[in-house]
Length: 277
Image (cartoon, rainbow, N blue to C red; front, side):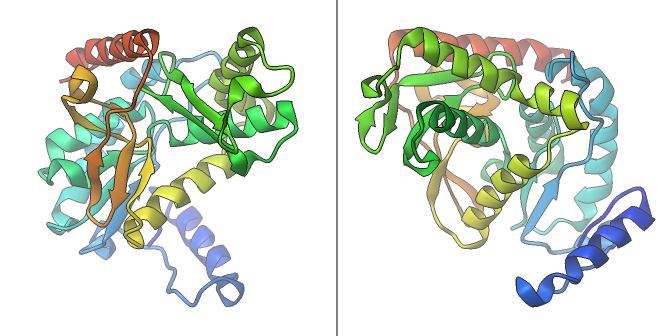
């Protein structure tokens, strides 16, 4: 079911997708309202005002919270006790925590896309720079999906070898790639008006993990309860994702510097949350 305030646009998107069903899968695709979502296994919320090129994700809080609360109020009656809600709208960590607080679902069934997209961008840009296959790169970005995101260099590898073994790698080069990763969303917005393809791939990764009960580890945003000493805030740590959402948060092995940066990310998000809670 595709739903949008612009009913014609939702109907058009549904029809366009339906036209491709013969080459993809014979699922039913249609437009509808909140009632049509009743008893869905997964609800993905992407609605929200787009970020301006020079605007941080956290600055969106003042423009998006009221809109998001209205969506949650409309959605809540259609949810079943087993529905998993995936929040994509930005600022995703704050809005995920808002959804946790308002929907009344078990905490594990409300997750945010978090740094899944940032991690995908990071791996892809590292591979592009060093001329290797992006699927061979394992490198995480954790914490906030935003300005305080943290690259976990200590465990970054390419085909099993630490990223520092790549010819031409220096920490200065690596930091430059991470800095471009952090700015990439704004750059895509500047160039074409909004991000679409990579975020779509990232959403698919999470939805398939839930729908197929893959129990794969992804850096989704969820309400933290103590791993690495982080709690009472939604941010991204490695999380086993499957049926019913977040199964378990795994405390990664990180350097002291990385741990300190993750706590700074926690503090930044808590500061914003205190203004909207």
